[in-house]
Length: 141
Image (cartoon, rainbow, N blue to C red; front, top):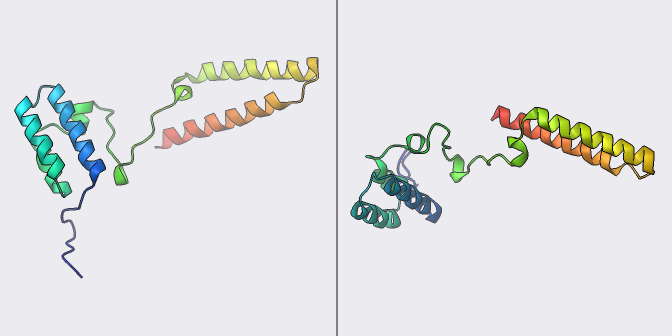
């Protein structure tokens, strides 16, 4: 069939070119590239056809892990990245437990004292299950 070589260069799209331009900008801001080198590499990135063309632009520059620190994320298949933690993912677990207890007590008071339907307790249970599952999945990844 055609000129398909295993391990050969792979065609790239606009998203890969844009990512390369963004990374080149980070290297320029860090002082690793002069203005002329940056402009020249941007032109080459815009004209790149394969992943090898883009890789050649970064051979003398530190990799993503060195540039972004120890927690820099490498893109996964098709450029996918792990989602950032949401606001609840940053809260310490004891604080989440305390908020849950206060919410549970408030919901019991609403149901028993005021005669409201038990919507709040069910919402708290659903939220707790969602948060626990999300935290477990984050630990596995």
